[in-house]
Image 1: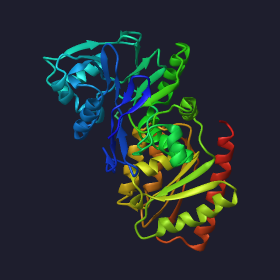
Image 2: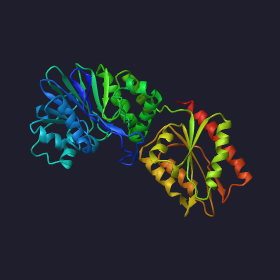
Image 3: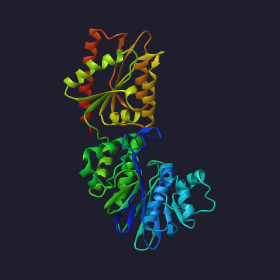
Image 4: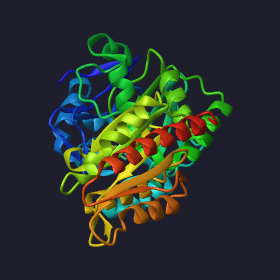
Length: 404
Ligand code: FEO
C-alpha cells in the first residue's frame, strides 16, 4: 500500500477495508477506510491509529517513510476501536511516544489497554503542540460523536484532522474528493456523507452547528479536512461543512418515505394506493420494505425525506417486530424536522397504528393524524381511503416543508 502525502511532510498512512459490510451493525456496501496520518517533523507525530485487523498495514505504511521507533507523539482524537485498537501495537514499536488525548479519552483508553507504562498528556480545547515547523491545536468535540472526541488542527498546513466528523464509509483507491469525483461521481460522495450523518450523527445536529460556529469564530483557515473514514476533502472542504450545516439546520428534500413491513401482503397492498395519492400530489416518494432493506439504508431513506409514513400490520395487538425495531432505532437517533403518519392492516383488535403514533409522540416528531387501518384485506373502499390518505399526507408535507 502506498502512502499519500496530503501536505508537505504530512502523510496518509491508513488502511482500506474493501471487505467490511457490517460495521458494528451498519451496512457498509462500499466498505470503508481507517485513515490515520503521519507528520514528519522534528518531532514525528502520528495522528490516530487504525482498527486492529489493519495494524500491520499502517505499521508497514509508516515504515515506508520512517522507522516507527522515531515516533515522538501520538494524537488520539477518538477512542472507538476502529481508530484506537491498534494503539498497543504502535506503542510496542515506539514505547517512549507521548499520547495526546482528551480527559474522557484517557478514561476510555484505560478500559481498553493497560496504560500504566504509557506517557499520556491530557489536552483540552486551545492546547497546542509544537512539533518543529508545525503547530497543532486541539479542539475538544465531546459527543461528536463520543464523549472523548476531539479534532486536531495543523496551523501552518491548514489541515483539520476531524476524526469521524465529515467522514464516509467508502473504500476507494481515491484519497481525495477531486480524485473520487473524477473516477466515480460527486453524487456518490454526497450519498455517503448523508448515509454517515443519518446513521451516526443525526442525534447531534445542534452540537454540530455549535462546533462549526466555534471553528469559524476561531478563524481557522482550512485547506484540507482529513477525516478518519473515506475521502479527504481538499478540493472543496466547504462542501462538506455546508452539507453538515444544512442537515443540522433541518434541510431535507421534499420527498416522502413509505417504510413498512407486511405479514400476508395486506399492509403492502395499502402502500400502492397511498403511493399513487402521494405521486398525484406531485411529491417524490420511495417505498421501503423493512425485511428487504438493511436498517441503516432505511434510516438514510427516512433522513432523506421530509415526510415519512410507517406501515405495520398488527401482531398480537402491537407493532410488527421489524417496524418496532426500526422505530426504536430511530428514537435513539433523536430525529427532528420530519412529519410522520401511520397505516396498517389488522385482523381483530388492531393496535399497530396506535403504537406507531405513540412512538412518534415519544420522539416529539410532527404528526399527521389520524392514521388509517384496513381489516384483513383492503377493500376497494379501503383503497380509495388509502389514496386519499396518501394525497392528504403529501399536501401536508408540502405545507410543512415550506417552513424550512
Ligand atoms: Fe469511526 Fe466513532 O469511530
